[in-house]
Length: 59
Image (cartoon, rainbow, N blue to C red; front, side, top):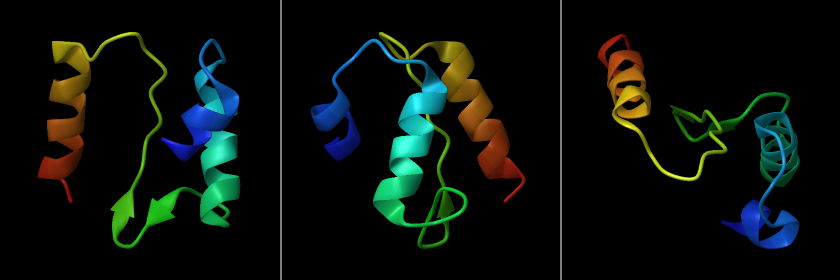
């Protein structure tokens, strides 16, 4: 939320990913043992939920 509050809406996913990396001070976005994927969408779709669950099944 910090990144979104600072940047607002309307940017491409890469902008939010890069800003998140800066916030986490890392070369890739990892928070603890969690790897984060940034999605810039107006709502969460079933396809995105299925993709996230698929990623989690391999971890």
